[in-house]
Image (cartoon, rainbow over all chains, first blue to last red; front, side, top):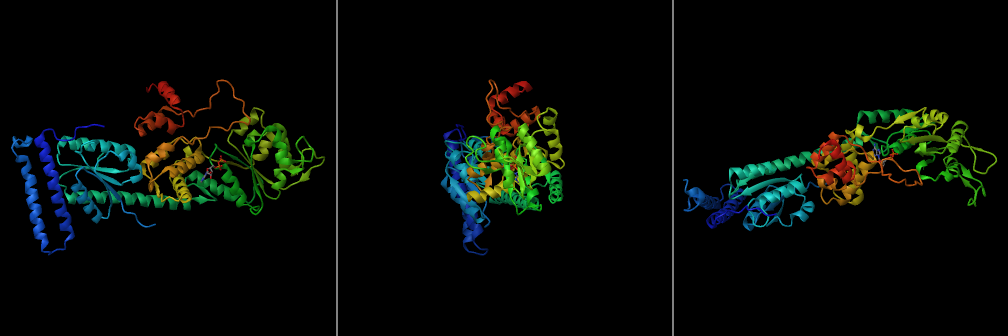
Length: 72
Length: 458
Ligand SMILES: Nc1ncnc2c1ncn2[C@@H]1O[C@H](COP(=O)(O)OP(=O)(O)O)[C@@H](O)[C@H]1O
């Protein structure tokens, strides 16, 4: 079984990897936010982390050299 | 039975993803199994039996689409959700076409994932409820160890109930494996002789020269080898019931003697000068058209009319497919207990297969198939694959050979004839896999090819 499911260029691969790592950060924030009771002081911090990670995800397509960056 | 949690299999090459999904799904009360790749799936999947798999599309070695295909093939009852950090519309469409439940992009939207997991849980619970309902139905539609919810079987149970107290002789007709012996036992159990003996005798399993002494007994020295006097089965069954299976196989002289027992209650041991009197209820069964045997001069007409005063005809399983789910449920329950397995029932795919199989061996064959599938299964539910791997393998020959049969040159065992529609349907069900189709149809692969040729389907 062989199938090229990985992104083509080294840069695309890098973007893909970044997105994976950021997804883990975003995901754990989600999970922790679900676990912490309403009004817990740490919730605000977690929300900050998650917002930052999501902002980074949103920036990925705009990295110079990324396929969709040129359309933008 | 403690409620088991639904099982989620997560496959991603990024350990962080596995960890976060595991954490999330566990909180949703799923049992989570994680893998960093799809390489070992082929062997692992049958034992893992996940209800749902969440698979990363972009993995080195085995890609997510291949994993999706593999799961669809091996365990069609497992739902698959793909996820990707690299989504395009085309890849999403492709995934859904291949049977994925959904296609999620990373970072995962956990709200959406929760909805999907709810769907999985709902489907599984509904399935369970149906299975429980099936086995409850099975016990509701049970009659003396026989299960049948179809109107024909319900009517037949009713007939047996009404006849049992009265009938002195009965003829039970029907294909092999339709439950003729069970009906005979029911007649006995519900009749006035229930505390007396029930003796079963298969006329197809005895060598021609031994019939007489088996049934009627012999005196000492009646023939070479008769060192001791022996009572025949009619004497053994005195006061009770004798069941003569495959009565069409009886040789003519024995037919005459049988008529005497039925008419006058008189048996004469081989070699004895005088007869003795017995009081036996005679129930005969045949899978042949006994009247044709009469017309052909092979079966005594007077005996035939004597036997068929009461005739009970068992429909083939093919004529009562409504019975298949409750029979299946009952057999799964029986064998799960016997093999000590926590099997709750069959998957929808497996049920479809069972429903559409031709069953030339009727209920006996269905029972054998379920027995074997239960033996092999490693999950909580018999899957399509479990059933497919044993279907057809347990089919008995269409007719029992006369013992001892002499092989005639060029004589091949008769193969069930299937019409074009059946063959097409079965092929479609197994996705064109001809070996599987042949097994399902109970014919050899070569026979299937011949048939396809004759239908112009090849
Ligand atoms: N209606 C039924 N419900 C449950 N089991 C059945 C039913 N009919 C047949 N069987 C099972 O199928 C097998 C064959 O039945 P049997 O009475 O020996 O068939 P026959 O005498 O017609 O060949 C037996 O194991 C029997 O328990």
